[in-house]
Length: 298
Image (tube, rainbow, N blue to C red; front, side, top):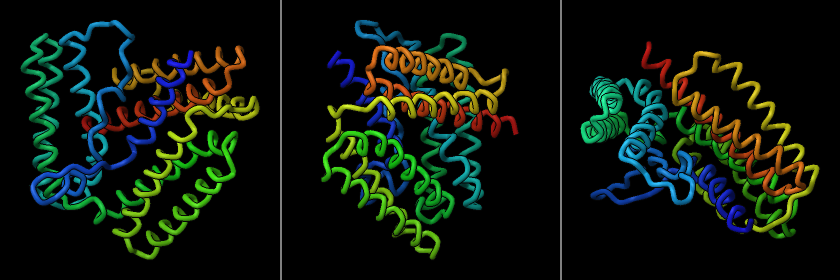
């Protein structure tokens, strides 16, 4: 059970950390500066059950899904940049990604893997042409929204059962987030973007500190009800004819919701909270997949 707790909490921390642009050097500039938020790790797309061998099909499928997520997250920024070269590279990325899906469907896994990596290369080139993310007001606004989400994810855990010191840390992070919002409204995009990234780093660290804290029954009930509301709303928005990736993510969300309900019946309130948060994360990614498919159809 303790191992299961650690695994679930790790997934929750990944969910918050996925919102974080990470740094890695590339020549004189960081990958983050060139490309914006980094690719999620493969583990973020659902861990394989222990002892399950990873087939070539599974591995390539995950690589294609990672590229889908990156394209979905970058499309708006590239379109708003006004750069014809960036838009051309984005079109090439989509074409390669479409060919990668076809190759995977025909079991040409090596070709599919090569094509999806080529799609990422085109996308990175497009993002370079589009310019730094902090120059795009919508990117900065979305980063602020993501920090709000990370703070909300942490609030349930931290305020429910943490020490006074950790609750104070959370309030301080929330105050800094309000200041970042004011910077954004005043037009200081670079400062707002940098501060909100630091705040999300602080939230992730706080979640790690609270890894073994208990959760009350009322907190667990609220989290479960919120997950149920998000599930109902997302199903309505996605509709019955969802794209395959969105359908798979919706099924995973339902599995997490079933586990949350079962945990509540067993009075395992910490598990309820963690499973409920994973429901929201899977559904968020399902909506991203739906938006990507809609953009490609257009």
